[in-house]
Amino acid sequence: MTGWNADESFVAAFKTKEAFQQQAKDQYGTDAENFLKYYPARTDEEARRSQVKLSRDMIFALSGYKWAQIQSETPHSSVYVYYFARKLPATPDYVKYGAFHTGEVAYVTNNLKFLHRPWEPEDQKLADIMSSYWVNFIANGNPNGKGLPMWPAYNKHDGEVMVFDKTASKQPLPDKGELDFMLSKMEK
Image (cartoon, rainbow, N blue to C red):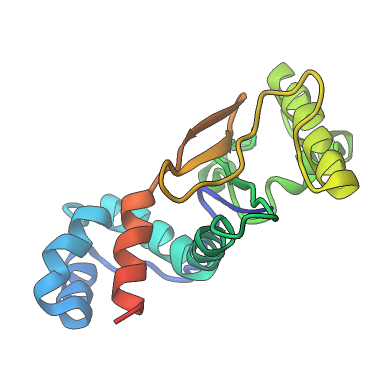
């Protein structure tokens, strides 16, 4: 099992749109236009969001994504990929962090009660589902079980993953194009 969160990032200071565009040109040369298609920077706010996505992809997503692609070709050992997109309910000062690094942990361990957040009813449902998946996976190498939405084993050709947001559902991997682009740059 592998996965990552939609907004996890370790960006300490954000570049302006101009500085981010220049970085793309310096780093990707003739591929800068393609890079900026996946990580746009038409405004400072858009550049900030793209820097969060780029940090997430470089630090967290690419290694799990590449491993899932390799593991999916192994006939006797399935891999299950998740994308945690639930923006945790928060006070106004903290809502900006969205689906941050480790944000899924309280759901996986079904310990929402230990965090003081303005939880919504769907958060407890999501915690029940996610913790059941993790227990099943630990017990028998497969997260699926009775009463749970079917979580498909990852197959690099169809790219379906389990997306955890207000509900759990199998979907095409969000940001797959970005990940494929970045892998193509690393494999050269």
